[in-house]
Structures are given as structure tokens and as C-alpha cells.
Image (cartoon, rainbow, N blue to C red; front, side, top):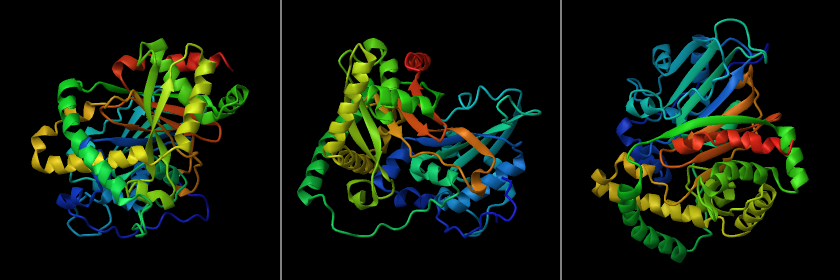
Length: 418
């Protein structure tokens, strides 16, 4: 990117060398699962300036400086050596287009090549740049940064968009608030459930992956106003809009209740209840189906309040125990861990996540503007990541094919309240 007068480019630092074979050995159980499932995360935004290959290379280099963990699988001849342009050119692609409106939906967020090329860093950058001029909104290009989820999460994207480092510091040892008995009980439960999940996955999970992607945009001020009129939080309104429309009166998921799991950003002092690498924790959220949207939205608000007042660590503790059990089983019965296992949704209709507000600034994102699109892909789950900015909120979906056409119903549903 171009820097403002007087602003210094991001300083290059030496990145510790980690051999490829040691990558998964250093992973926490949660990271290991994300890696084996080939789960990805992404960030996409418009650029007011023409975005050339040189700009993309500079962006890639700055990303590896602020987030050096993305180089942990990249084996260089000389440990700690800076990335050369030849390597960076292999992880970027720039295409000239006549219209930016199909993006980012035109891009696939699967990122298969990220996992197939162990000789390259675990992220990719794609650029769609207009052949000439700008569109009516003043945009000249759009960028996409796609990464493995095992080394990156939504909160990291927020920090990078503000040109802040996202390196992981060692976790400080401290007494755990979770009793040994409780931890043992989760491990025992996971020991029973993991083999059952394997059997269910190989019996019930789809034989073919059919997840597609769709993002939509709303004005933040309108979301705020409608939420106030309904006397609920903006988060509740957004969760309600997405799940109500996709459920399609019971034809999408259920006529009685929608089983969701949502990501909550935990605090540092709560790290013992979550994986040591990630800052999020997953919480169960059951949403009762209603015919009337206003009634349903207020029910979502009530369900969120109950979930937040309860044991917010329980679901994540069980998930961590399940990841550990599967890791143990995989070491002994790796032939059971086929791609079909990760297409199993374990009874959840959707996963929902709200990332912190996007506030772009600094040399990393200079020239990039809202709306910002950020989300995640998992081969077995219908997912929606809500990304609020100053002016816009984006809903970013990874959905099985049968649900994709219903995304437009969210726009029509919201239009009734504008």
C-alpha cells in the first residue's frame, strides 16, 4: 500500500523458523481440528486506488510481519530469512475486471491450495482491479486475504485492519477456575461421544461438499434504528434476521427450534476455559421458531440473555475435550478421518459470529474502505459472520447450496422495517 507523508513502512522482523513436520505438533487441539478440517477465514474490502501486483506483494510482506505465525509452516533454506518476491508472487493473484459488483461473492473461500502447498505460507491474496477508472462509488479494486483458520481468527483480522500486530504471547500459568473433576468429566464424556460422532459422520454426513458463499450489506444506522424500535440489541436483530429468513417458516431448518452455536470473544482472564491459542469461545443457543418476526427477534434477545447469564464456558470445554479425543483417535486410526467427517454438523443448524467493529487505519489498510467483508468457511456447517463497521454491517455466509437462495429474503425481510 502507499504510505502517507512521514509515515514509515512496517518494520521487517525476523520470523522464527519452524519445520513443516513440526507444525501440527505445536498446535493446540483446537488448532489441530481447524487444520484437519481445512477451515479458512477471510477479509475483503474495496480499494480507492488501483491495486497492482506490487501493492499486493507489499501487503503480503506486511501481513507476515504483523502476523508471523502465518509463516510457521513455510520452510526456508535459511531460517528467519525475509520472504523474497518470487515466493510472494506465488501466493497472490491479480485479475483485471470490468465490474466489481460480483465480488467478493465470486471468490471461493475454500482455499484448497493453501493446504496443498506446504512450501508456501498459509495465506493467499487475491485482487480484482478495474480495467480503467473507478466505479460509481469511487472504488478501483477489491482485495481478498484468505488464510487457514488454524493460525488466524476474526479478532486478528480486526487488529490487522488497524495495522496492529497479532502475534501470540505465551500464556501465563495461573490457577484454573475449572475444577479437576469438571475437566475429567468432560474428558470422559468426550471419550464416549467422539467414537459415536465418527460413526454418525460416516453414516449421515453429505458425501460431497456443497458449501457456497454469499455476503450482503446493510447500513449500520438502519440496523441501529430498527433494533431500537424493536427494543432489542443490534446483535439480536442481526442473529434474528439471518436465522429467521434462512429457516423459511420451518422449511429450512426446523418448525420448532433452530439449534445454533455462536462465537463469543472471551477475555484474557478467561483463557483457561478456552483453547490457549484462540480468543473466542463457542456457546450453545437454541432459538424458538415463531411465525411473526418481531416475536421471534425478541425471543432471540431473551435466548442470548439466558446464554450469557449461564455457564459460558461449558460448550467450549466440551468442544476442547472432543478435539483432544479426536486427536488421540486420529493418531491411532487415521484412516477414519476422511473429509466426510468434517461435513458432519453434529446437529447444529447454524454457527453465528460477531467480530469486533472494523476500524481501518495505518499503513496496512490505507486506501481501503467499507464495507468490509470477513467470514469463515467450514465444510460441515452453515455459518454467518457479522462484521460491523462505522457505516455498514456485512453478513457473510458460508451455506450449503439449498440455503443460498434464501439470503435475498434477509434483504426483503429487513426492508419491511426500514
